[in-house]
Image (cartoon, rainbow, N blue to C red; front, side):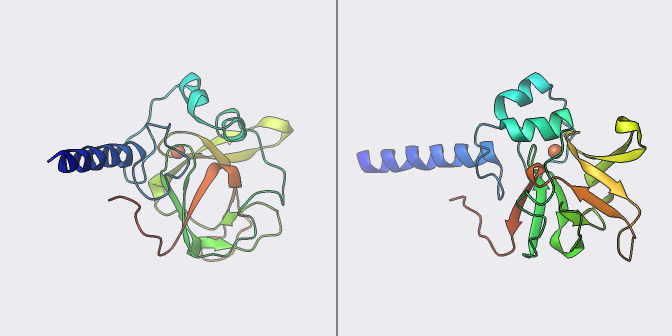
Length: 176
Ligand code: FE
């Protein structure tokens, strides 16, 4: 009986833990209660709250619009098949099918996984006019979009690796 109680308690703790982290690409996000690969509801979370749960590098790019140095990120030359999620909130952003080899030094895609995955806003910083790409769920800065991409869209979503989580195809869920 005692063994059954201990087993049930452990299973309950494990399920609570997986609920908090919400699925596949949650590795390292255990302290982030908003992280989910399936919930697409907008997140009205303040920067003060994000600062408590994000790494300094991710916070600087995602919430303060910093840019990682080219050719330094994890994904700029990766061609592994899989799915890219927002590293801040877990929102599904890109499939590797839309990724292309770009010489710019940042991971580049020709289209998002779905229209609502991202949103856009004008960026007139550094005396230029660019279009900023933000996560459609948490409004975190992801990068910029340019009109020099390959067919079929001819667009280049030029993203910061640090703003992305990657889940290779075929990985099994780690839930009980
Ligand atoms: Fe996000």
